[in-house]
Image (cartoon, rainbow, N blue to C red; front, side):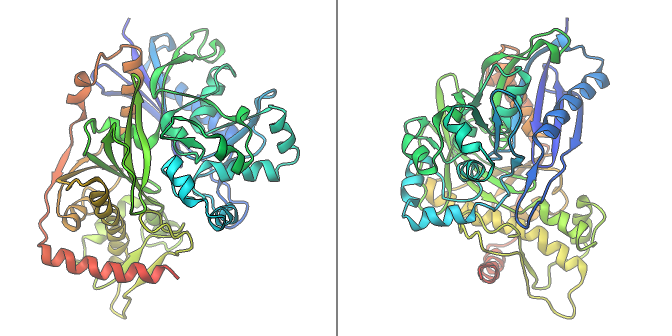
Length: 492
């Protein structure tokens, strides 16, 4: 009987299920949009039950499209948007509040208080993270403080916390598994990446009982099985859990230290694999766990861009300048430059290396001659400039001069990625395939011996396109100096 791997991805905007065969090829897939809830300005939530329902739905759709029976699934892997926080009642299995997104900024006052107390260095030393609304710990604290009865239930050991992976695994296992992996744990602002444990001092700072927290596991191992009622009597191994950005790194074949990977989803992320070496940043980058497998921990330097694809959605939904996000490159290529216009993509503040959460989206350089093509091009260029901001300090921290960057995104081949190569001055290898689902599928497959080793899958991790820089260093540096002036305007 032919077997397949089932890769699940729950990202910010979609629930996805993909069936992979032994060559790493996609047999079938299904996806469904996630509805975002915004109760107040800067609050971003989603319904945990909708996430769960979506996942069950897309699994069923992917199976139906391929005529694959559930008993042919050799294992399941889950990749998820990181930091997004869910707290649920262990007795009922129901969430006590909506999932609070990584994009949500309601905990800004909590974070400011932590900084005022001088806890920034302590938290960064223990977790590798900067104090920020981005991460899970302040979100948990907010839920316990603001949901009636939550603090009492937490003290009584009746509540559980998890990022999206934990929630889905809890549901898939019928409440038998409360786990997460090292990559997701390292994004909570509660996990000590030096000692590899939930840090008791940090738990005290945020007033979070340890009983709420999941057991931390490898990114690739059999944790348990699905409850039989989900798959018609079949108990399928749940064999991988990993943050979506780290899954993408693995899916792109960035196995060796010094290889960097950039991706552009709702936000943008740049990760450099530093291997077993935990590199501390002096330039506002995060130190995080890249992967945990077979008892080995790989670390990474990471820089985040809060606004990437969401800037194109703004062009479409609020400004009505494009009909779809993939149209942006067509209009960008209708002009040879932005005519001096710069767009700083900071709708949710600026992440690495600035960490200015009060920064606002900004357009500078407008004249009477500015047209929509200039603005659209400036938005795309802004994403590339923000990536250079991160790469420059990443090279300083790692002492590695980047010769190439691996990139994947659903848009970018026609303008963004070539411009990225130009403004960085390095080669770029670009993939159109979804390396996140591929990556978590590989991790699950390795855990159940569907594939035997990384070398067996490396040939499937090639790039679709290669771009080399064509811009001169003089022009590159001139443009970037103007960008630095533009970004200062966003930091009001």
